[in-house]
Amino acid sequence: MGTLYLVGTPIGNLEDMTLRALRILEEVRLIAAEDTRRTRKLLEHFQIKTPLTSYFEGNELTKLEYLLKELGEGDVALVSEAGMPVVSDPGHRLVRAALAKGIPVVPIPGPSAITCALAVSGLPTDSFLYLGFLPRRKGERRKLLHSLVGEKATLVAFEAPHRLGSCLQDIGEVLGDRQIVLARELTKLHEEVLRGNVSEMEAHLRENPPRGEFTLVIEGCREIREREWGEERIREALAKLLAEGIGRKGAAKILAGLFGLPQREIYEISLALSQMETEERSEGND
Image 1: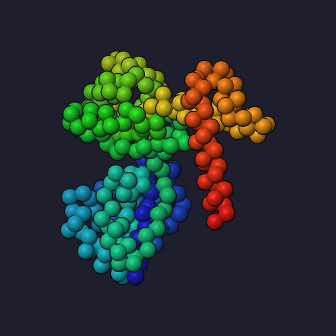
Image 2: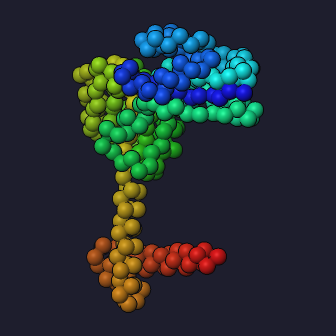
Image 3: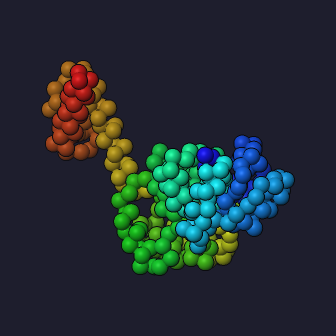
């Protein structure tokens, strides 16, 4: 029995190909590729002569048994058109089928437009929500965006250039004029990262028609992030005052003036903080 390797490949610049990925592609008995033409160019560039077979959305089911049979004889590598396989690309069914048969599945990390765009965005990266390609139809796209109005995590999505203008219009109307980053042609010759409000990006695109592949990084709900950040500061201040022997009501009165909030609201936060501490001590005793 072989191993199924999920091999990350460059999203543009061939110099991003890892040494481990090159070794695996040379050693496996077969490479299953989403786009054989693109993968063949990659293999020729690095002088790799491993046999190649197509594996894309249209033949996922018909090729499944064949690839499982090949895995019964030895190692197989799965590659997508670019980046990490399975992420918004074919491969999920193959991975599940391999795992069901006890076949090891091993990731060989490589470039990702998602993490590249996040890293250069300048927006919070402590939590993010990946949306894949946004729905093509306006109604479905707006429905999705409405469900994300209160989402505090940074949003990441892919979008085609010919839909980018209408997409930005929907984002602005539904989510508001938030900060957004348009990362274009990442790692390629014409790489460009545009930062600004949604309205600023709309104006830019009216003067500069979009070309190439785009990754969108959208600011999460600022109000929720700021409120949670404020509550964290209140909890820290409460903990210090209570540790100094000031009563709960007294601490709430002090902080109400400091933060400009109702005393009752801060008192309730102190009660919740006390409850959390009690539960933590109870778990520690268990």
